[in-house]
Image (cartoon, rainbow, N blue to C red; front, side, top):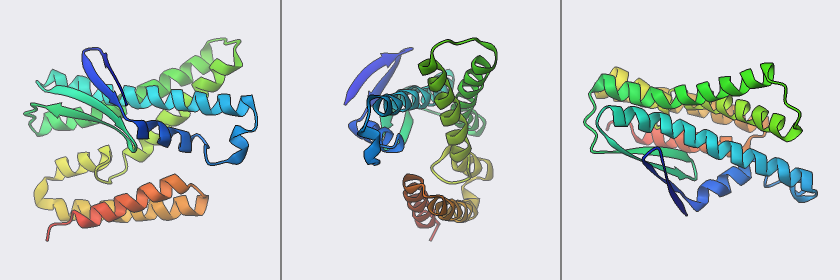
Length: 209
């Protein structure tokens, strides 16, 4: 477990965060350890993922602080979370706080894309890192904005519709997560399949009785 402070926010990085990054970087493939270049590629992916997730949570945390909360960031095995200590958000503030995370991710992805387009870079490692940063932030923002709780898209949908329509929100989350799990299984994405299957179960369980 690693702890540090950035921009006044306390950050905790749990051991399982790095394990997940390793698996997503291809750590289950035997050939990943067959050469220095393959190990370097995994390392680049893990570092890019760390800074991308941190930037995402800093987006949440910055907006939360603006509305009076005292945020703390935790990076864990399923990504990250900005814990809003002392928060008293109204609906509009909560929507903005949730949306600030994906906005930070998209901004980082666009910056990486613009640098790749317009900045001459001699180092192949830097170019590869920018490609990874762009891919991570665009792909995982798409996943994160799906209407599945507790992903940001699901939280936005639940907040927008209100708890009186929680059953509908949960059913939408269950259907979308199940569909994504099947697509991921068909595409051979084991981690995404397991994640979506778990989220489908969680959304079904959250339905009002």
